[in-house]
Length: 435
Image 1: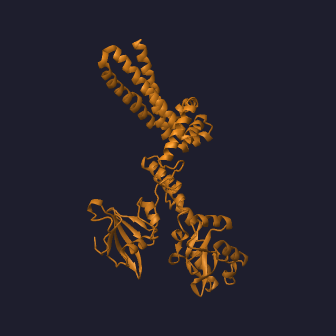
Image 2: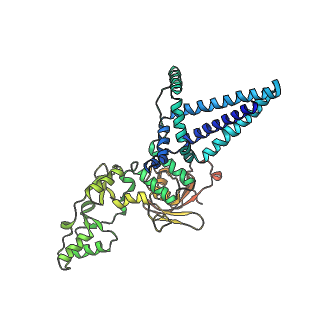
Image 3: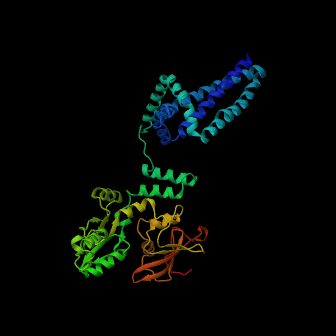
């Protein structure tokens, strides 16, 4: 009789191990993976998704089944050891069952489940659904008691306030997968760029007016055509009287068509008449909305104006797409024009390089909330326009001004500073020093 009872104890431990593994697997299973498998026709994944959606009842069934199995096993084991060894058998039962429950009914199954939660959850999905159906009435009573106690304690039921937004949680998941080596840097940057579109404004991705290629519409036709054809761009803004007065956007294809219609005679071409009307957009427009506007208007070029209506720069469809895919030089490296790594570990950067592009290329995390370009970041932190040769340390990097033209910083050298050698990371040094 004792051995029969002991076999029931082992069965209870097996049941407890099943519930322990099920709890770990079902609470750790990826809802995204289950949704994907369910759409692919996996019925077990559909069951897992339903169990996760009824999380409170599932947890109640798991805990109830686990505790019934553990308590039953302990009670039966105490009876067996008492029959074998007398009153001292209670101590033996306590010691043996503690080891058995902790090792074989808790740690071992949960360790197995935590290493493959998705696979284990698919295996236990149907048995758990059957368990919930069998324990349904009892679980309903337990849930009612728990809800009543929570109301007495003033705890709001059914409210779940996430710390991060869904977009930030998705970004965190991508960063975690990249850290684990499951997502390449280039793919992580592309996904991050896509998620950033709603947070960016047109001013963050535009080409500033100082970097724009423009042509004076009042130039003689032959000279104007030569400048347009010598440019590396196909769309050229035309200005009249002053560069800020843009009267149109000349497309190189339209110019070539006009030349062909005139049998190659450039002297009679009127560039302003074949130029397209300029499209002005506000600098504070979200990039995601501008992308939709490009698709809606079926055009790839827009001029950016500030709140006073003055031209600040231009934005193209390519500028927005590059925020997602980056500037790719080959199938492996992501580089940015104006960023040159040096043999000594430093990086020489043009002042006009956007901070986001530098972060993407070097895998850095310089802040871009207060400034768009690297030069703007240095000016913001220094609270002045630095002179050539001055250096500043902030955000874990040392910035040295290499070139300055009038009020513009055109080149800097950036070196990562070891944290132990940085005096105070929260208080950047603003005094100019050389290194």
